[in-house]
Length: 230
Image (cartoon, rainbow, N blue to C red; front, side):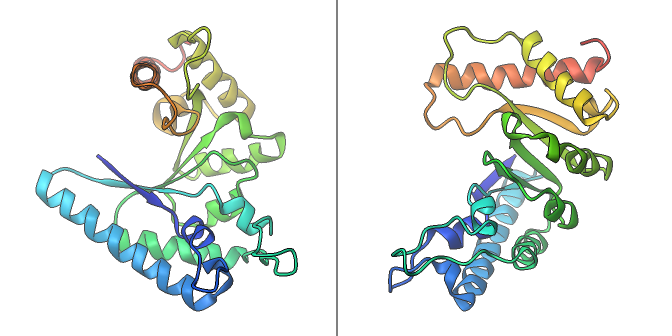
């Protein structure tokens, strides 16, 4: 089972203070909001785990992480820009939340330019990414993340119904192509790489959402049987 929440950087990037400025511009607000997020998600996860008697993992959604680090967040006016968030601050915010949750934590972002070096240093267990955003410059860092024993979930299934739905074999072949670009063994498809929809399914029809999730499941089952067979 998975519980899901905005990550600390996206949270403080999106919330406004009483003066209209983003919370990320106030270090005190950043600390308080991250601490509150960590406490709330930890309590929610623990309550579900007790009630259902099953392991519960956590996913933090961080679509704003690259923009916050790159200084691309807009201010209230052009005269009040939002300064780039320091990587060490972002790393500390993530690790604070992960430590409080006390469970495996995945970071999900469909945005390009993910800070793979930061993610490698962090305590994140898995990263879920839109595979189409991966650039050649990312590949070594992604491979290093996988080789460190952690998981990368590749978003390969369309998030809305295309004119022609891809087959399980086509999605699996796309995953194999990424694996070959990373230079990791095919066994990683069974052990350290997952397949998912490219991003969230909020705009998908119910029928396509079921189809997309089913495709990802079927690919995972095929790789579990024999990752070399695709």
